[in-house]
Amino acid sequence: MTPDEKDDTRAEGFAAKWLAEHDCAEPPRVGYPTDEAMAAAFAGCVRPPDARLYPLIRERILAEAAARDVWYRGARDPQVPGPAPVVIETPAGDVLGLLHNAAAGKSPDGFAWGYGGSGPAALARSILAAALGDAAKCPTCAGTQRIMWRDPPDPGPEDPTDYAPVPWDGRPALDSRGHKVLLIEDCYDCEDGTRHLPYQAFKRQHVGRWGPEFRIARSEVLAWLAAHGVTAEGGA
Image (cartoon, rainbow, N blue to C red; front, side):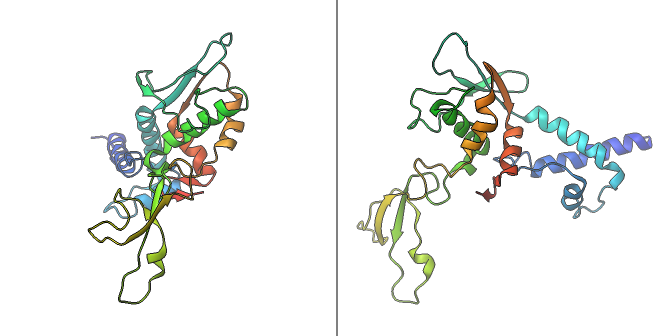
């Protein structure tokens, strides 16, 4: 095996390790393979890669990540007013399904784009929520839209965390099993089980500017979210 072939083999191996820890997470963790990021990611390896391999590793990472990406695509006839469906598809254009309307309560008619308004706002919010996956759920109610307040333990010292609400688990308050749930109510931190997302900014910067047809990758959406302080691990 020539030195170049050895470099290719090692680069593929390190790229696979990076993708296993980033792209394959659900939802994928946002992160561009900078030299610093790769140095940190591979620091625990028995034989970390030399810095000269970073460009080759980065090339492999980006190529494979692009092949695994999904895209959100919409097309409408400019002569026909009204909402239009948005599909989720592979990079090759194979349709995986329709984008769920995460703001149906505010825009029951569906999605629109190319201007400001409730339809474009619904599309912006829905794309952000779809890109984040489970991480889009409200952290207070875990997406259930309900919270419950539990009775603090007795006897014993008071623990401030006992007074914090937790996501509702479906059980009624004060049932015969004595699980000491004092109150169940609507979540005060969300409207529909989705965390606060900067969808109005996404609408202004992207959705409101799109023409009759658009196509945007999930990785691009996640990178935009990360730049605005929202990641799968937490944020605004």
